[in-house]
Length: 317
Image (tube, rainbow, N blue to C red; front, side):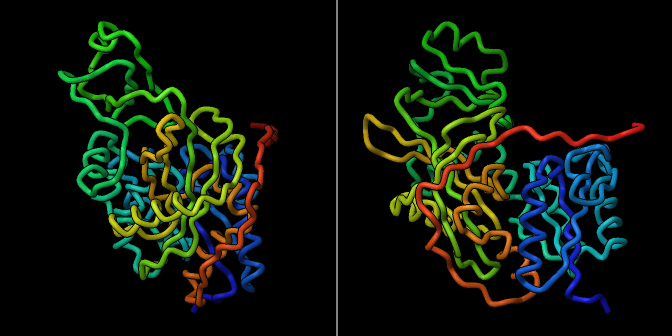
């Protein structure tokens, strides 16, 4: 029988998440366990190699990837399977039922597929009565408008239009979510953790001050009870579990929050919320061990996170 004091976490698509790997190790020590982090990546020379072992695998859309992850997880006797990208979440959801002894805090594959399709997600949000930016079809679009690729990631391919002719000339326009563009706005992400029983243990809003490649590089925690409740309502409406981040746009002119995205995974900027005192990595490891968990709302307001580059060097490569 495996020693419960030794925990192996298989990270899917977390090749740059060195800080997260270190937080997981710290959480393990606090909970009396030694954590080994293993990354499943297309290549082995990724930053995460500075914090753990890397296993070279297949692309997320490769038909062999599910069986390969199952094989790797069994060989490692992985205790936790943790995805870090949209595609990795969908794969983890498919793998989950094949690894009953591995804790994988992800939603089902069908729900993930809806959230990762911006057009379908907007429909689901509207059907659930969530406030969202005004959403257009091609024939009723108005200017100014913002167009987002329905399967886009990291803010790639997003375009703002102030001219109707330019919008109508957008190639593959039906593959874009088209919404009203709100120029005076702020963007917030709410970092949450939900137990497998459906209890929301934390909901920490943070203002996205600076974004690079779709990821927060500068963020500030903000105690906003209205936004915390809105994110909690979203989680319950869609029956989500595990780490979840909910993104909102604050319309400064009309003083309202509008739902943009729901991502059933850890956000890249969740480090800000963890440093502010939200024990999200403790929750992940604690729930895998069956340790009683308690809600946390005493995290620090106005905690500022800013990021910098740090190199990982591979010799004789």
